[in-house]
Image 1: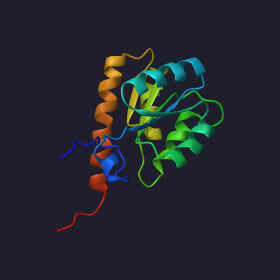
Image 2: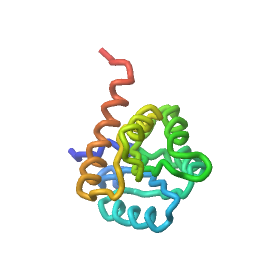
Image 3: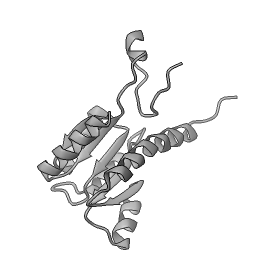
Image 4: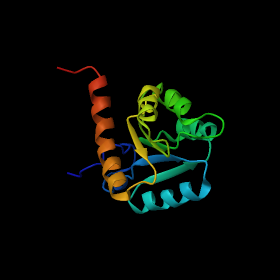
Length: 153
């Protein structure tokens, strides 16, 4: 029996079933260097990464890519992170949403929660803490999806 990460898709051939899928993460930051650097780190950790540099671009990518985790800055051009969270939360199987931002006051954390974020992480990020959060976030998503479906008896 193969242990699967909770975010992976179950579609594929038998050969693909024996190979663990890489959890899908959408990373959103208007600072290209920051986004690209963190994307490289997440890729090395085993995640399948897509990067967006604006909220509008992120929404388009998310609808096609269907990530299980979205890590986004709040201060974005166009659709900001709060609006993006509201839109993504309306999806049928919403991703776990993580705000990764320089906004660290208590009121900022509250606004993130009200917008639909599951977690609020303040920059500069502790990479070890982020790695643990991403691993746990996949399990939170699986539990949320399981609990939202009617039980079969």
